[in-house]
Image: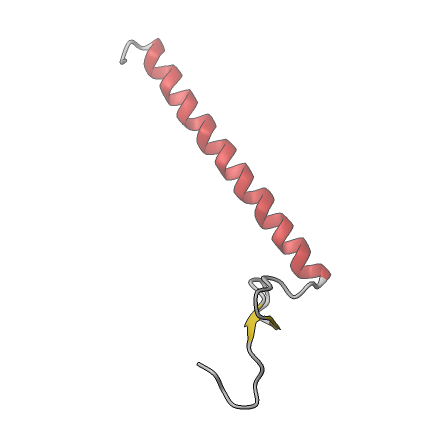
Length: 66
């Protein structure tokens, strides 16, 4: 929805401050730090999930399930 007098814009994914259309973040240090922490957390979750799956497969093979 376009509002007269308000330039076309988006919002920062972290703090919701207005940013230019097409940008994801406002560029502040705190938002950049939060984004980097989110990326690290997601990577950690993926590694943990892969480890759990690999452990389950290994345990299943050791116990003769597959």
